[in-house]
Picture 1 (cartoon, rainbow, N blue to C red):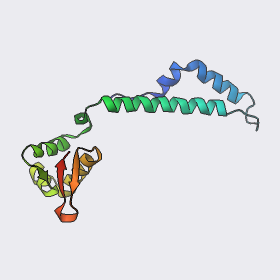
Picture 2: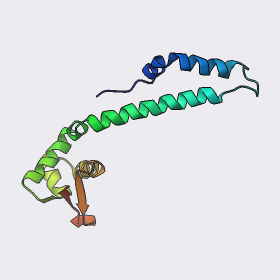
Picture 3: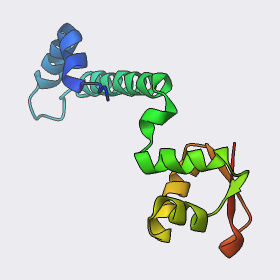
Picture 4: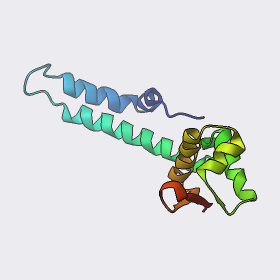
Length: 126
């Protein structure tokens, strides 16, 4: 999976970095120290990094974000309109607790929706 290097972003904006750093260090640790420019630069770099990571997530297919068990749980919808934790556990040969975690991850990614509550909870493909 690709990553967004903070060091790379700083390297690409080296001139801005050193100007901000020099301004901040001009008065040392005195109360007159102008940290605002350096902090602004650092926050700007972090925003750029977040934007890069969001771009990676948008371009990544959902399948690359899923584990093999999560993918296998999704294939259960090929034969069933609705599935339960018990069905996932038995079909994958895993404990019910693990099946519930798998279904919760699919919920987070908005790949399934939850129907009902408690023991009668079922899941449907979105």
